[in-house]
Amino acid sequence: MGWMSRTEGNPLTVRSTRSAALPAANSLADDGTAAQPVAAELASAPARRRLDALDAFRGSVVVLRLFIGSQVAEIAAPVLLHANGFGLTVADLVFPGFLFIMGMAVPVSMSAFLRPSAAQGPGRPERRPYVLRIVRRAVLLYAIGMFLNAFPFLPEIVEGLRFTGVLQRLAVVYLVVSLLYITCAWSMLPVSSDPAENTAARHRILRSSTRMLLLGGFPLVSMAVWIMATYTFHNPWPECADVRGLVPNCSLEAYLDTSAWGVEHNFEAARFDPEGLMSTLVAVTNCWAGLLIGMDIVRNKQRYRTSGGVRRRGSALILVGMLCVGVGLMLVLVIPIGKQLWTPSFAVVTIGIATVGFGVVLLAFDGGLWAAGTGVSKAVRRALSPVGDTLVALGRNPLFFYVLSELVITTLDYIPVSYHGTKGTAWTLGAEVGLGTWLPAPLASVVWALLWLLLFYVPLARLLVSRGWHIRV
Image (cartoon, rainbow, N blue to C red; front, side, top):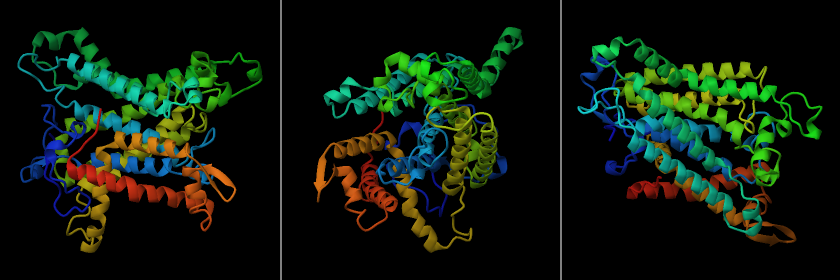
């Protein structure tokens, strides 16, 4: 299962004792590939079963998703809505965050995949069971996404049904990145003891090229293909004849999405779909970045056993993330940043932000920064404890809360409500009339989202964890 004990005195740790029900996606089972231990620290370090930061970071992304998704678009502040065209808002960080944490879970949940066996020997893991599990999960994610697109199954919705969406993209990206991992991860194993195999030039070249693809070639190829295809394409539509530069409605993305399934099946019947074909090519890089961090956790789990090791790892992640943000901002000079087309600059910046975020959460939850004797008062530690428990609780069932929030909002948005001549829905009037009559409109939307988060989602998450219920596909 992963690591058992937690840093003593850390208030940002969950206190549930139902370890048998913890999801396998966060297990850190011994895979036989760990790096050399840090002898001085590990000699006296207690056995640890689990990194709380894995759940807590996922919980942070879930909180952001529930808060952003519960905004009332008609009155919400622009920074809490997706950028229109190019730009970057807080709302634009949610989807990349989900891709990032999904990538981290891949090697962690498959930590036994690279475990050498007596029958197979190192470097020859059996892939078939993992391929079947990956395909099954991808199909289920896609099917759930299609269900949400069709809900509540009205004729006008079914007629213009979208074939893409958030869960559909998660399914495709998960499939691609997981297959990349189980295909290429053997190159990270220790070299075989077979002299004939070690001296074969073809084998050495294959191992080196496979490792390069896994560790950096894959995202570079994805982005290079996107850049070359996007900037060499000229849209044949008459209205795009004089368009120069990257314009969403005349882009290669628009041409492919509209040609593939028709404009009526795009999001809001636009020329392109924000979860369309070409943008998915770059979106896989966000998941790949999380994959690298997950691989580091599995391969070097000895270094995560102590607070000192975690602090060094967390600090390194923060520095790497800041570097990625800087590189992404430099890319903005030539490629605009935008979630709708998922441009390479958007991918690099959001990868950097997610890496910094995970580094901070890792330091807070497993780095011992809040432990007794670090200068933080007992009252502060006691106040922070419920926050940590809540984040971990939400992180245990991310898919459940995403689907639930979509069903709740969609259902309430289809219930017509009139109040003193004002017409709307049970969702919009709840904020516009219930709160908007005595609060500024953007603040009313924020309070409405916080009420749903604190009074509905958080208690439900704590209840699920207390019962040991973990809903996953």
